[in-house]
Length: 121
Image (cartoon, rainbow, N blue to C red; front, top):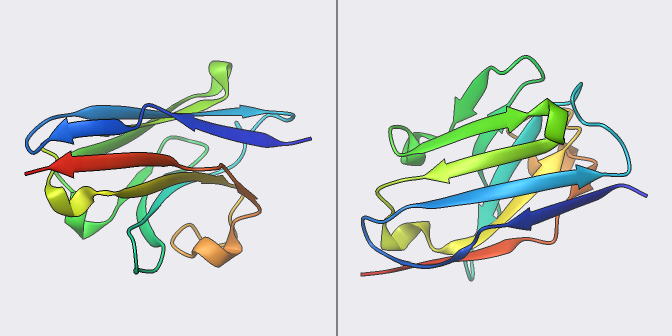
């Protein structure tokens, strides 16, 4: 059974940092692009970042220069380093794997349960 488990969320003040982790189990995802999405209350799930199997990274314009995505294939884990956090970054953050299109949430086959990130002003 495939599982993606996110961790690292929490409450932080504006300007602070958090690092999210997504640990995969049940199969290796070293061959698969992995993505991070977020969903704020009353809003649709939106693309945040993705990383290819080879390490190429893709970031939403809203987080460029502040967020970094990386992966450790030996640990089957993907990370999202979030710096200079803003109140508008508040959302549930989801890890996802095996996409058809890295920007399209509907194309991902596997999802984690999500982790809450709250940024206070």
